[in-house]
Length: 517
Ligand code: ACM
Image (cartoon, rainbow, N blue to C red):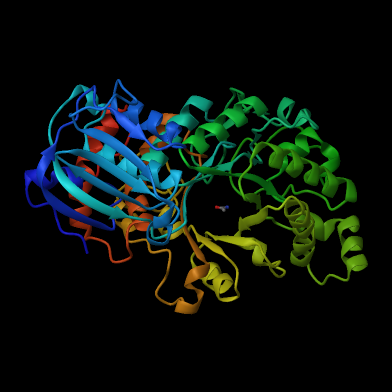
């Protein structure tokens, strides 16, 4: 358990969020100035450059000097102790020594150093109390999902978001690129996906459950070119964030079916969906459709180098398969007893394609229905129950339950003065109580819990500023639940830790909801 901030002189270390594994206050102070050099081991040039820019330093490296320096040290011999992302940060009157076994560890430690100092500290030489930190994450998967289908979010915003994720030591950005309401990624083989699928003619006003539906008659469109995707992937990689692209199938496909009607089961779908909620228009099971989707995955894998490819799999209402002679014939041909098994068969072919390229399939918990294929990773979202089941059956799991980490829910119980949200409420304290390893999970299955992920579904978030409002400060609480040790500090202590971050968010023009005190 970490201790509460006790005095002003300790505040800087207590401003590190998520809370580090261990901190030891030392005598003395370190003073940074604009000319403090960063001396980096070979291979750390990129990390040194980003750190120097974020601290507002003028020099990357310097001649030998008696002034304090910041040293970045790569020491592979410490990989047993520090792992892939851990670091050792020593701040003293003589300077700063940041040591890690990997470049990622150096980058993560750099965020802690930044947090000890004011933004663009180089222009401000307030002394920082000396301290030694040893830190590494509790979980390897610390994710944030953003839905850009319901509302398109431009590249500069994605980069700003990646900066924030990196600052709070998250390492996974799950990019929900396609859904019924819009296809947002350029596919060279299938240009109509963006020509037709990226624009819906109008958008629902108000809540989906408010009938009759009223619409704003403005078209909503937007997509990322492949060049932009590559740029974002590179930007994320510099910040040691992996991007997991999601192509949601076989449900959530109306935008694609509007572009290529031969993918669907019924006729007459002319444009992406204009309101929210689960949609019955799903892919058919023709061999050409399977090939089409595999071709898309091939193109996606060319763009995204990371180990995981997300194929969705959620909320696929099977009515159209029940009514389709073709789907029923396919089931008979394959000897399948249910439409759930047919979905499993469909996704198995996506899995084969993904695994042929040495990647791994990940999907929402519904991929368990009809039997989960070996080697697939499950995102447990309706609750933790399916995640528990999957982990016990030997599958890897990311916990992302609605109860704690769905940031499209209201942030307080009395939501009268809040902007429209989907439903329910998840307070900052609710998020803070998230534990990706539920107590009922036997210890033998713990290793299958890769970590946790927060979700931003954007039906009710039409602007980037609104996304930030729903994300902050809940993201800060979430970050602590997936990085810091399981026995983490009391919520009241976390609130103290959070305070300087609210000011920082303001300084960085990041919108957030003022937390209740
Ligand atoms: C989901 O919220 N449909 C994964």
